[in-house]
Image 1: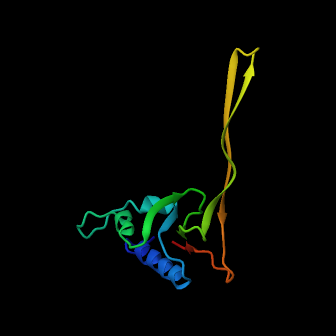
Image 2: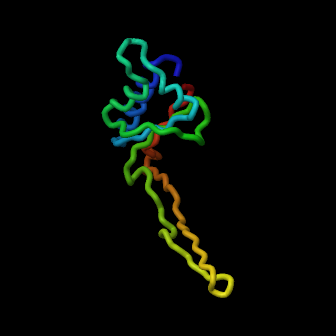
Image 3: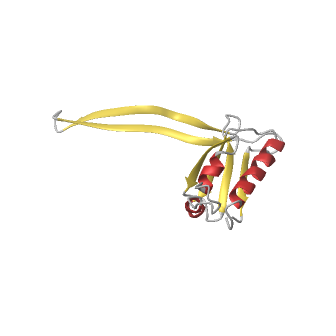
Length: 134
């Protein structure tokens, strides 16, 4: 983001776009790690605020997190509702135990099978807004 106010403008525009499609908050903003570092910059207006602080004050925005899989210059705003994304559980958390060395050694493994499930509605709306070119 070239200027300190650009992130606020982009996030507010993304929230407006999602609300137009009837996807309301709470929202979580995932930001590429390059831009996430830029959010630590301070405003030069004497307020002592970081860009990050002002983003967190936007009504409806619950959190801002780094998205280490996002390419630089990209952010994703997600409406954190069950009809947008949920966690599919294939296997609950389970402890598997077995013996080796004639019962003298006990071995343990913990396993689980989980997947994030992104959903869309009949109009191809998903409750996810991508912000690019930042």
